[in-house]
Length: 279
Length: 279
Image (cartoon, rainbow over all chains, first blue to last red; front, top):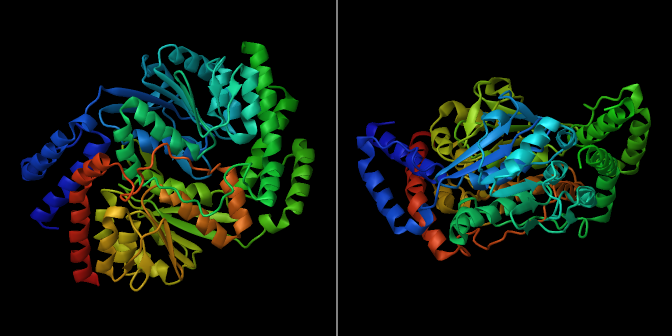
């Protein structure tokens, strides 16, 4: 790669990182022209590039469902002028699914107050453990006092509920755990994204994309969220129509029920126990 | 947690891991009943739980877009009786986006032949580096000789193209890089998922979910894919309609063009250079 090509590549890289983390991009002299063009473009889009600094904390725990975290993170990483913290008890890696480990970037102890977003993913078996983990529940209850948005995807809502953060609020969860929200005094509400005052909860797993985009619009503005939607080409076209219990192929539904009804029952039993102890 | 509750929890966990990795679940004596019930359910769903062992290799490289990998992985992890390898030159962690590192599970050197799926994610700045990396391109060309499905999401198609794997094939890529596919003799084709013989390419970033589900149906059957769709509640409801250049909010489109047209041009220039050298 010659010098000119390297300049071209790094300026491209700088542009890309500007979208995801404005202010971190390096602009050595060799990139002055690209930088100036970029700055001019940014000026002409001033209503999209502005906005106060945002601080987002995402609980990253062992046994969470990987996409529950990564869906919203995909949208949050597209915000400019933001800090995103993946918070856990330690900075030891946590396993999400069968292959991928996530490295937390901050401990619960170091997590600031006055968060713009407090986010909790779901997933088995982690949700069940988190619902019974007083250190985690106390952390969420404490940060929830000052967080601007208190949020979850999938069964993460059961963890928010166990922490006492959904009492009297409409909320959603993974489809076969919706009724369990009642145990915590929440109002189970069907919906891909359910917003009640400053609580925003998403449905199961992939709902994190719809949730993340809706939250980006709240944090900035709709046009910015629409730019993010184009950036990640979120123009979904599922090849089948089996993504909700109402529309699912009947044999597929029976199969998933056979697999996961016991898990849903176990989560419900845990919810009752936790609520009796802490509620 | 008492002994009975522990049994309940671990059997739940076993059920969950059975869906994601059949055969790995442990079944100690305390879980016999749950295990028997589960086995009975599996029998009644025999056409869904069967199928030959699948081997999937996903290239995991520095500077890939995290969701490009995680979208398809979310669907692939739901397959039973499969090995999924995250392959890279070394087992050192690779960064994907601003926060998350992925740990490869296998080196390129150890990756087997006769893969069921060879998969390449996209993303900046990694795609540009991979298009010029002979070690990676030679690896893909070699594994492509025996892979059952040769696949990509987003700008991963440009890497497949650079490796000579798309010549004469219809393919798609991230929307602003579609024309660059021509450089490699591919036939740029609009579509969320484009299938031509054993090549399956997905559009930008979030298209990985549609792609992954379509591929699961090919690898097993449509009913199984429909079960996976319900499992991950893939019933998308984007809050806005700005996910493709054709429907995007005009100001949002201009903003993204200002940001990423230079990157698309740089990828095109690299494609021309690579093709002149290797094509």
